[in-house]
Length: 101
Image 1 (spheres, rainbow, N blue to C red):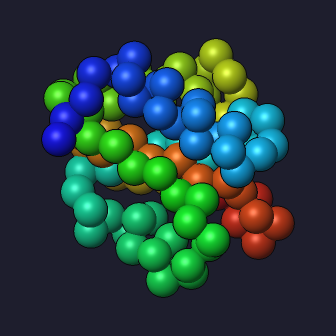
Image 2 (cartoon, one colour; image 1 turned 180 degrees about the horizontal axis):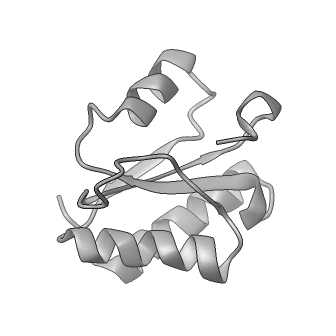
């Protein structure tokens, strides 16, 4: 079920707090659908459930959430859909193997 930007920001922030690390330890991006390459790769890696993904009402709303974490909080931008028209916002804690994400 789609959520408004402020709810997604609050949920992702709470999730980050649960798994630890400051904002710079996290990667935040957008994706068009649940079969996005970055989401499928994360699922295959089974990274201790640190992935969170929420659906925004619009791509602009998803972008605003991503930009909040990247520009305002210092998170790394995810390598999601290049078209930037996805309504899904995801975040995961970077591991040393994924630090270049």
